Length: 603
Image (tube, rainbow, N blue to C red; front, side):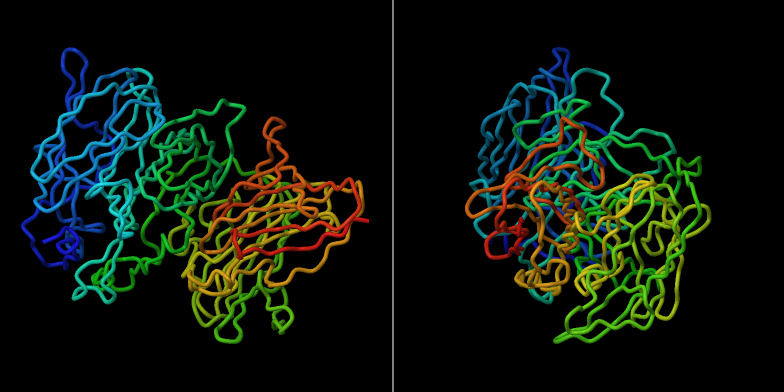
């Protein structure tokens, strides 16, 4: 009997007799330290029950790592030591039908990932020096090799490996993202395939709530132990990236090199140390911005049937809830308040229903302009703007003001965003709700649906927010938007991406010596995009000036012939300053054939 055939779904009432996986909050290190300062850890790989929501809901029968004498845990047991500590580890393979390969239990930094091979029933002993301080990980795979030949994911067999500079360790939190995704018993699942996406062993809304105080600086270590990419987004606040790493190397940023962002695209098996300070009370979220990683459609079969009446979560998976206790706020406002009404419309398009935003209650998209993305909102820095969203759809909706620093109740996650006794609701058909927007900094932001994201985002409920300094006017001749979205929900049909709601882009006419700002926004439900300017075969550098509306300091402003990839929920601003006449080509896309090109004619 192979490992593949015995991993399966577990019903809510089933008792397998296997040990129950505990959710590892990564607050306590595994093992014991002897008088010589050597950390000894005994690990074992076993079969277990993994209940990703609560113990009385459906789960999975799968393999997990445990510390000998304790329950199996996901993430795997935490290794936490100081620089130079020697680590002595034993690994028992209690599986009878599969060998194991263990990666990442070695000295850092390193040029290659060391591995240990453990036969069924075998115990392997290993000793090594921890190495240089940083945020790292270790993981196991059934069988031999770095990757599964079947395409299945068992990154529940992964945990954090933290090396501190000295004792005592700094006051921080460790969050590990694990994914199990594999074929299971087809009699218990409609398609014979399930997946569990968890942070510290739980799926939203059962992840550990972070109860914080205003002004309490947070230091988080985020570990993507999966092989998938995750753009990690913080609601309501910016965070500083203090270090980035992978299983081999961890690089700490100096104060001048820190990136100040609201979203960061984490590639598979990478780490990120962040620092941020909640400066306003309320309920907030930290989550992956890939819609397919946070939709309630990824819940295990049978879980929704056990929800209390009227309490069905509209998100699941890689989400952390943040509750900042009542306290002062740093929000300031100046000038007269402004009022806007935004209408959420519904209309029929070939093959599907489309949604759109408009300022005009009587407007209807025509065949030339499908109404997506929605109209750009031009806000003034520090001016309070009240936006009333009137829902003319046949379904509820709710709008998130992505990247804006604002009151918690106006953040726009239905039935979660809250402060001052107010809550952002799901706006029912025919109803309306008024959000108060605060614009603490100028730059490029996004507004988008935060309810049934896959359907509503791909149907058109998104748009750009441009916040201008108090004395500045928007210049549409020299300021250009590039908003990437989808017009289909099928992730296999990437040819159905759209740029600014169009398949074909109009030409842009510019002059030598002018400077043009290009504001790039990725608000598709998945995918990472790049931007590039070319003249013939020659790459023409663009000057990167901002990310997530945070202006780069001088030392971070760089000319790039082709940009890095930007994940969902990221914005980036570039300047194009042509010095020669001719025809140029702006390219934006995912790579391969999934790109858009736009002709720029320089006179």
